[in-house]
Amino acid sequence: MDLVIGAVEDFFVAPSAAFLSECARNSTTGLLVDDCSAFDGYPDREAIPRQFLVATIVFTLGGLFFYGLFSGVNYVFLYDQKGNLDHRPEPGQVWREIEMSLKAIPQMAVLTAPFIVAECRGYSKLYGPGTADGYMDYGHAYNLLSVVLFIAFTDMAIYWIHRWLHSKFFYKWLHKDHHIWKSPTPMASHAFHPIDGWVQSVPYHIFVFVVPMHKVVFLSLFVFVNLWTVAIHDGISFEPPSWVNGAAHHTYHHKDFNYNYGQYFTFWDWVGGSLRDPYAEERLLHPDVMKRNAEKKRQSDLNLRVLGAQVVAKKLQ
Image 1: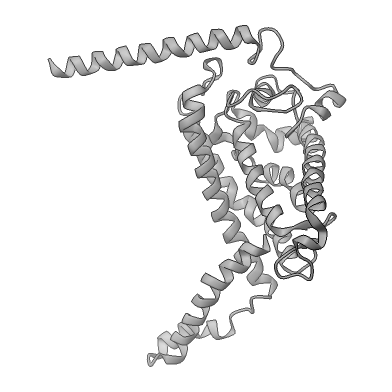
Image 2: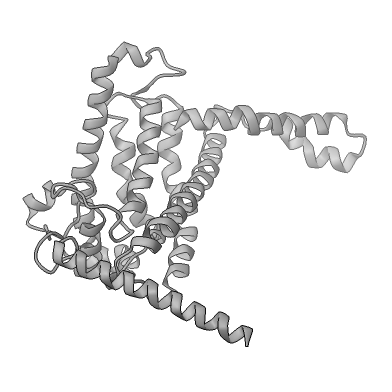
């Protein structure tokens, strides 16, 4: 993440601070000098307050960008076109999901900023640009292994954190906000109580303080995590093998509450006795149910086309 912070500093923050400082030095208006002169003592880019502020702003804007991009594209081209009719949102739900997400993302950014500051200050085990070690110092095999370890570690940690959030006390005060949505849409992917969303993201950040990982690999995985979080909230975007915790699995988590806590795989749900298989009879991915839902979707689309034609014909009369 420090690669992004460094780029923002180089191309936006530092030039802006320099411009404002020059403004103070060159001004002939006493009031303007007084207003701008604070930038002469603007905190150095290595100062913790400045790193914290920049990290918070970058994480907020980045979070809003990826949320809008991934959730919006998924909603329009996958969820709305292929979503399961048995799990449609309530009236007004989508806008409430968006509202909660827009409120939560900046607050989660504030909570996450200390991790980013620690990365910028060199306390993590990230390597690559700006460090003594590069990609080939570890080699292809290790870089691939680090991805496997990242996925395995975060899958395990998030399973147990997620299950803990379903305990009576923490569910009431933290996780219940996310479970307002019994039939979530991609727009619910970031619709959390801020502390809830932050707690579930902690394993991603902790990992790089324990296991060496290339900076670009870490950033790529962070983008993937956001994409995956959106995908598992779209109802039925793909039909995964039984060992992958896909959208249908997570639909049952929202619907039946005490099942399918996993993030990527079903292994920990199997170990913890909390697995609800969407391929079982009368569940989302059973062939008979999929055939029935496809017919419902076809009939619904036909009804919409007929209704549209009737509206157009009425206007032309």
